[in-house]
Length: 160
Image (cartoon, rainbow, N blue to C red; front, top):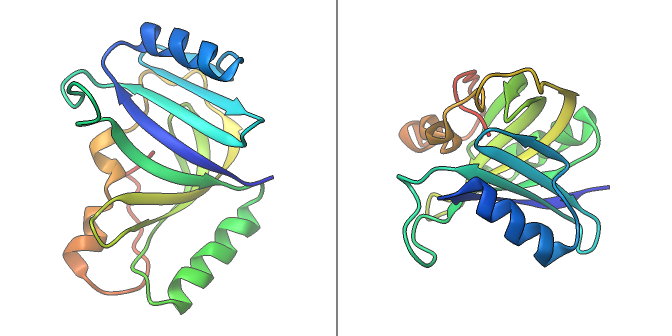
């Protein structure tokens, strides 16, 4: 099953988890310090909360971290890479990267305004991680913007 991912910066992870659990009627699928994700069945949504008080401002300013589509298999990620390439989109590919308490295969691309989107699959849990295992600043695949050329670049430091 594929589902859209919405990753939000939040100023207080505990308050956000409490709110979103009430809003969607389900608790988080994974909870770590400064991080939570919800695997919501209806509507199909992967909601990721990342505690980042410095990035988060009142209202919607600073709320969006990145967007994504979670797919079931690594093959679906490879198919997305091929489709993006055929369409001339610049991409950044990451294979077996540990990020957001999970080992993942993913491909990044940015929309015309620079909003980062990822297609990804979770290969394994990495709950033993200390911290997010990545820098949320790495969520914007800067190498895509800088190169300006379609294709893929390996960048193990960027992530979720």
